[in-house]
Each structure stands twice: as structure tokens, then as C-alpha cells.
Image 1: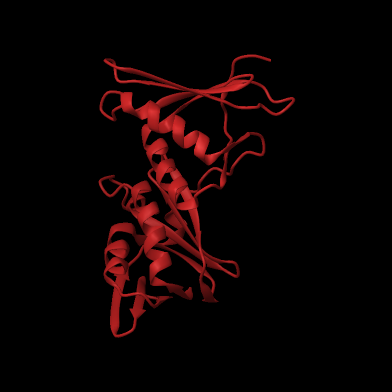
Image 2: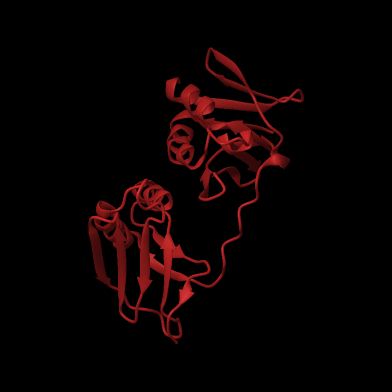
Length: 223
């Protein structure tokens, strides 16, 4: 793998993705990000086996390939670099060469084959304006703490409303918004982990007004 990428764009993507990794896990690969380069550009994947995500980063790919790189180490290094171009080159001895201007460094990596495969998104699902879901999450998370309620919040998709409910055992938050459910789609409800909700807020801020698609195995509650 060999590619050239903007330090500014890569730093922004790493800020989003680093929170999806887990350095404290006994599996070292969960503290890494999977970097995959092909003709389309650079794709970064992160997961802690409970929450996962993938982000595209524009890059000039000279040689395709995949490699698992420690997320914190790469993020800290790129954050210190001035604006410019960054050359990433995968070496045969298990190292990633990183060069920008006069700066040169190497980072020890893991084999990409060790990286967990994320489940593929389902075709069925619902599409919402990102601003709508952000508003519900921000209101619901007031009554949700990681220690008391790792489940996060319940999202209920009704006939003409979206409802999100969260509680920490002392407080209860309920947020509702109008939503026109597509014809033929069934109402459903699903529990979303708090970490996934907070990660979505960061991604939504970076993606601005892009629509968001919710797909998965929600529990059907009516026909």
C-alpha cells in the first residue's frame, strides 16, 4: 500500500474514527484502525466489536493494499504535522512509513487479516434528515449515563412520529418529532447503545445535512 493524502483531511477523519477503537481491550487489533486503499481512495474502519464505522478519505493511491495501524499513535503523529501532503507507505517488515516534508517516522502495524469484519448494511431501513435525529439524541442523552445505562436510548419509529426515550434510573427524557413513514414500511423500535449515539453526533457534525439511514434488525411492534 502506498498513497498520498492531505494531513488536514486525514487528521479530521482520525478524530472521528479514534473514538470507535478500544485500546484497553485484550485484543490488540481493536486498538487499531484498518486502512484500506484502492482506486477510489482511502477507507478507514474502526470497531470495538460493539460499535463500528467506516469513513472515506480522498487520497492519491499509488499502490492498493490494507493494513491495521494503532489509532492513537497515528492520530497523535498526524495532529502534529503542518498542513500539506502525507506519504503513507506499507513496508514488507510490518511497518508503516509516514513522511511529510522533513518529517519521517515509522509505525508498527498488524496484519489486516486479523481485523474483524463489520456486518454489511441491510437494504431495508429508514432514512431521516440528520438534523432530526441529532435533535432527538441531544435531548434524550441528558437522562442517559454510560455507567447507569449502557443501552443508551430506545428509538421508536411510529406511524407519523419518531420518539427517543432514555433513563438513568433517576431521570427520564422523552423527545418526539414528526416523521412521515414511507408507505409500506412497518413501525419498529430499537435500543441504540450510548456510544453509538455519541459517535453519530460527531459524524453528523462533520457531514452537516447529509441524510442518515437506519438499518438493522429492529423489533417490529405492529403491522
